[in-house]
Amino acid sequence: MKIGLIDVDSHNFPNLCLMKLSEYHTRRGDRVEWWSPKGRYDLVYKSRVFTDTYSKDTIVVNNAEKVIQGGTGYGPGGKDLPYEIEHIRPDYFLYPRFLGTAYGFLSRGCPRNCGFCIVSGKEGRRSVKVADLSEFWRGEDEIKLLDPNLLACPDHEALLEQLAASRALVDFTQGLDIRLTNPTPGNIAAGLTTLSEKSLGCIHKSGTRPFEGVLASGEYIRGHGLYYMDTTAYDCGSITAKIAGGAQVVAFTTGMGNPLGSPIAPVIKITGNRATFEKHNDMIDFDTSASISGEKSVCELSGELLDLTVAVCGGRETKAEINESGVVFVNQRHSCG
Image (tube, rainbow, N blue to C red; front, top):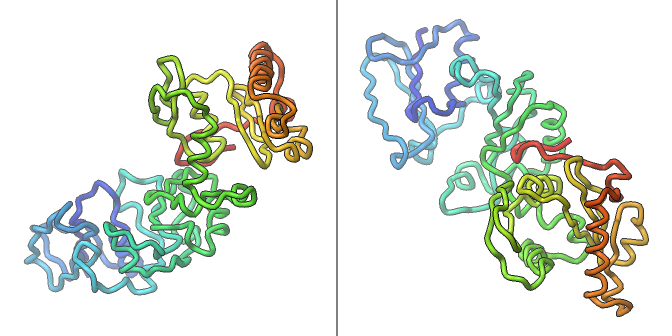
């Protein structure tokens, strides 16, 4: 059989369905190629991810015995791929410009019901595992995950371990649901209940001076005063972004204790929890709990903290430096190490 393929959305992003169909028919011994109006075909597949808002289907096929069209761009009610095609390794050679990158789903479905998204209606409001990484990855340098909400999948930890073990660069193309990563288990153990509480706490810890501006993650600070930087909630990413913005020293507040430092600039660990300081004295540099107990004023402690900061700038090692617990964040899409 001669098979023709049509990517209605253009070729700016690989069409996973067409790649799987190409691999399936190639293994059967069929001849597979991109459709041409000048050819003659036994079967033509038209695949479309987006609706008319983004890509209109104006392609008329008159040179095939049979035409099958499918994809979310054609509306609800379409048929799923047969199991043997859905779980076949994609034909990455169909899109030569994207060779070296693996594409696929580890999970399907999403518990959210966002008005702009069709996933919950099409795939269900439960996120479930549909594949292991080995199904579509064979050592490629980069992995582009198409999962709508990986963290909502009960098997997400095991799937993330597979991604970590690959040592590939991972692009979560649909993002990660921050509502499933924050507050963290440590935050919850310390009494936080919502992400809003956590965010307000971050703002409150900055003091009462007015903000001079808001910076993107890693954006260089070009003025004086207090700035807010929109960084990831991930500790090593946040620290690295502040350093990229020009911070010579990072003051890191922690309630439960955190050993993280940085190999680029010193990180001073500060806590207002005396129990944390006593338990993790080997990783905490400064204890402000005396302001809570009334033993010292905030002004006294701020002076001591300033003295410590000056000493660190002059070469005094922080606990993180002594413990050699420096970590650097390489890229916001990828992990640190």
